Amino acid sequence: MIDFSISAETAALRDEIRAFVIDEIVPYETDPRLTQHGPTDELRGELVELARKRDLLTLQAPKRFGGREPSHVDQAVLYEAAGWSTLGPVALNCAAPDEGNMFLLSKIATEEQAETFLRPVIEGHQRSVFAMTEPDGAGSDPKQLTTKAVFDGTNYTINGQKWLITGATGAKTWIIMADVEPNPHGPSGPTLFLCDGNTPGIVIERVMSTMDRNYVEGHGVVRFDDVTLPQSALLGDVGEALRYAQLRLAPARLTHCMRWLGAAERAQSIAVEHARTRTAFGKPIGEHQGVSFMLADNEIGLQQSRLAIWWACWTLDQGARGRHESSMVKASVSEELYKVADRCVQVLGGMGISDETPVAMIFRDMRAFRLYDGPTEVHKHAIAVQILRRLEDRR
Ligand SMILES: Cc1cc2nc3c(=O)[nH]c(=O)nc-3n(C[C@H](O)[C@H](O)[C@H](O)COP(=O)(O)OP(=O)(O)OC[C@H]3O[C@@H](n4cnc5c(N)ncnc54)[C@H](O)[C@@H]3O)c2cc1C
Image: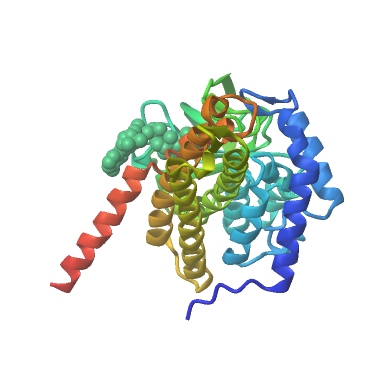
């Protein structure tokens, strides 16, 4: 039986997070260090210290690393509260890509790798990247990977180009996906490597200009020029990168949904207040049916999204892999919340497209959400493949 009742402890923590975000983080939304390329590292550092003082940093971390290791459903409740400001997850150290990277590293890194590359990220002292996407190769289809790793029996030498690599500038913990070429010394295939961002040969060519601005230091175009790594840099087994990427993505997709639900809720609260106070044609605009329907559709969309997220989280909490469920929820929630943000812009009139409120920023960020961790079409395609396979199996 599905039971979505929230424990008193989780409810108290949710309220604490929401109050912290509103009182201490929202004022930073107009800080000039929230740039077109997202919050700077300096701003991030300041926000992280505020969360540390309140003992709210990296709550999701495994207990062995000092975290509280909440269930997936509890995580949904807490991340929604953090997402009220796009800077909330940055402060609490539960923003992408660090959050998904911490999850993956806690599952597959060796003890030694975890101490060097994971613990400092959990403690908020350094950031991490996941470098998979390529301009002409891996994207929706990671099997198109073109970045190569040549193994000479001692070292791996990596060459290739990546882009859209979130937070590349200044990150120390790097997870790189590259295709190990067939070789006489061992196995080959798509593989993850773990190394320091200062490793010679990692070249950040530029930071892309993008429409979103909530990810620390934006999204980089990166070149690997003979990046030479020892065998101890292998993250997990050779040839297993695509499986590990899925392991990372199922919960990571859901955590995006959780955080953006909080942001969409914020946009709705601003739209509701505007509809109550702004007048046109002799009455508050919220009393015009056209506006009231938009607000009602938003409320329905928010609640449907919340329940969908909780349902997928519940399946993960039961021990399922949740790949199919998280695909359905990511596709539906990203589209639904985008519509919510769009209607909020409409209710605000011309002000909606300005930075007078955070709604325009939320709207732009929400547009990007429909693309990353799998564009909607890719998830729908995967869902359809699953449905057809089930039908075949029944025959
Ligand atoms: C804000 C943001 C942050 C990102 N951060 C990172 C990061 O840190 N690290 C990283 O490696 N990558 C990152 N990415 C890249 C992201 O993972 C890719 O954008 C995504 O996987 C899609 O790949 P692509 O952009 O190459 O699109 P393509 O693969 O070129 O796809 C283009 C379009 O084709 C359509 N399409 C593709 N396949 C199918 C299908 N099977 N059925 C129907 N339609 C299909 C979809 O409409 C899709 O949008 C980020 C992207 C964004 C927007």
